[in-house]
Length: 455
Ligand SMILES: Cc1cc2nc3c(=O)[nH]c(=O)nc-3n(C[C@H](O)[C@H](O)[C@H](O)COP(=O)(O)OP(=O)(O)OC[C@H]3O[C@@H](n4cnc5c(N)ncnc54)[C@H](O)[C@@H]3O)c2cc1C
Image (cartoon, rainbow, N blue to C red; front, side, top):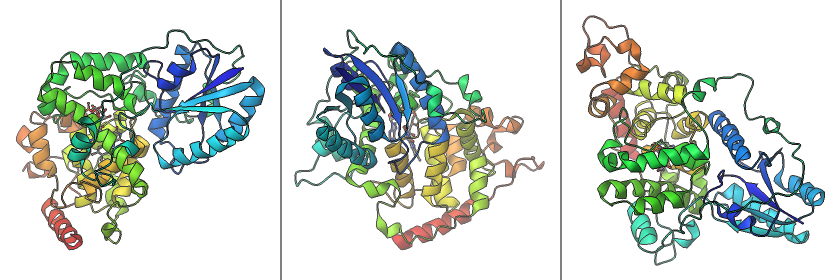
């Protein structure tokens, strides 16, 4: 009799409650199923690239025993049960509505076949259903959620480490990662191979390097895109290549100060995003505040295309969008600036920006992406106030003072005097950079008027 271990968003060996518990006295069959049938949101191109590599790495840690399938979860599992004499199945707990529905259905089906399903939380520090206000309703504001609801009340489970011994079922692996067809024929992703090393080992190394020193400059340093004071762990965390429990407890064991506390609170924002999506699932593709449903977005396709290509004429915006395109990543400060610009200055619906990020970000996350966009657009919970419109010129001058970040992605501006870097249109000699696609001040006024009508 054998045990199936399903991997999904927990692509790691260490601190993986599903694997850790499954291997106790069992011969396991590790399985990954790419199921595009039940989900309302298929993975974007960058996520598929990351997933492909993460699975490859996991497979080699599992002695090439990981079976790959593409199709409907239930029918694949049904076949595996008969083929390999399976009696138990271990998998991660679901917190997204699509996954919850799938798991509910699977549970009933497995009960009818007399198979035991064992479920463990692998992705969050605090299960969203266990954090409620005194009156039993969910929190809508981050700080009380994080402080009163989580940190002061519940200590997240300690990381589990590595299972001491993994015993595999004696079966031949006839599947191959290419069966999932995650990488398209056009090899756009080759440029990413030299930037990212995608393995659990690397995730741990990045984390330990980060807590060695950069974390102690995090609170202030995290705002400066040219500096290395943020962890860049997001795609690893997104795919569960490092556990948030480990991050949490290891940071707790450091000498604590405002920086370590701030870093933990950012992990808390990730929790809050999942929490909101769990309690308010409509937020996945609708305004959380429905008063925005009739907001008149301009949705100009020319402006949207210019934003996507990094050709708006505003250097910090263009640098950010090119960073995204070239590296599959964008620094948090810049994410805030470019998203505010799209929504507020270009008057493009946040949902379109969210989709572009979803396709291009290696860390594209079901919860954090939607929550980030709704925060910036002011349509979400505990969102940025409507009058907060990031000024791309001032943001660039303040957070990229030396121009290092901007020039890295816009080398064509190398010869411009620094004081004009974020406003090249002011150079008298007619510096040949893209003309701004909007008048910043005018677009700001229009946005304020439109938003104040909703308020
Ligand atoms: C419009 C917009 C879209 C975003 N989309 C995503 C997304 O798809 N996936 C994603 O992981 N993050 C998203 N974020 C949040 C944040 O920008 C990234 O998590 C962060 O930039 C990742 O870099 P890092 O790993 O160096 O973060 P660090 O500053 O080192 O933070 C450590 C970890 O905390 C979490 N985290 C940090 N900030 C946030 C935040 N504001 N919200 C949620 N989690 C956070 C991430 O898991 C991150 O890896 C978005 C933010 C905005 C404004």
